Length: 486
Image (cartoon, rainbow, N blue to C red; front, side):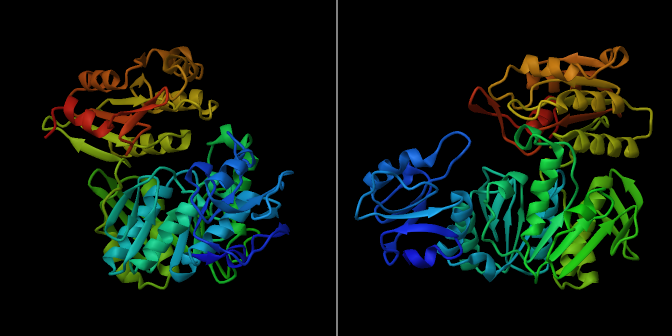
């Protein structure tokens, strides 16, 4: 229970009708979840406007309303608070209601197109290996030290986010590593949080269905670094051409860069890249890791750099780094007795797909075939569809175009859009199979001893979303079943 005036701290109030010296027992922005003594925040969303449900919220027991427009019909026993932006106000309100949990632990946000999940998860594993209680907020799952919860969004809404952070504090966590999506920045889900640091991995073509232009996408990512406090650190990938841009307006006390190809504060060189793992030279020290591929060298360097910036001993960090295992659905592989290699990876952007296929090229001998099974999600950025198909053909001997999560779209039409990026030579490599399980089965049947099968796009996901229904589907389980792997 909180006093309303305390909850409204920093929320940039424009007008107040009624008393703010009242007790609030809960906060919500969904009128269906309103309970007695609730503060209801009316948010203008993409699908609906919370202002339309103010009356419903009051009937359900809301005693205070935060809104951008005060209703014409006001009730005397209700407090109305006008703000410029309800989503922004909710960020501060949520943080205040849960007693600002982000200030009671070291919260580090990781943003970028690719590598967020791996970097955040490896940091979680690393700091637990170093003996700390740690929280994790990622696309794959949410962890409160040992407890595991399902994740529904890359970054939860502001209320849920602060609730989880409060639970982490209560459980004794001293660190939390979280993915920060571009949507979360624009929608103010992270507003009001106190970050100890921010990490930028890279930025490539993605989410233009939402941000409309690549410039707006960059601006959204940059917005995260612009909000970092003066006592925080900012860590950016210098090899990415937008790495310097990300931190150019950053107020962080410490700004550092990491790189494989450029001179930077934290430097890494790949000594060996094999199916058994990466041998890296990080800041003059050799370390053998279990992860594979250049993209993972970047992820591991980001993890190392972050840990050092958080004050951890370099040798302790490198020792723990050598024992870390790959994240589920990120270059997760199996090998059959007759030496067929099956790989499942979340690669769902052109850059991520190319990185995975380049890694496969690095570890292959040259005699085996590479068979890629890939699709594109429905109701998402359609511009990347032909690019994804072209990249798959460029780096593969055989390509099977199939369904990803078609959502409300016709999967056959998505595949046809993918094929528009192909020339006649490419098309001779391609088979189109709408049913994803059948596509995986066909890919396995085409494989001979030594060949490599890549199943890309869904990674850790345990479902396939078709016409609003999430049907159970696990790429790795299907691959194991078809390949008779035990």
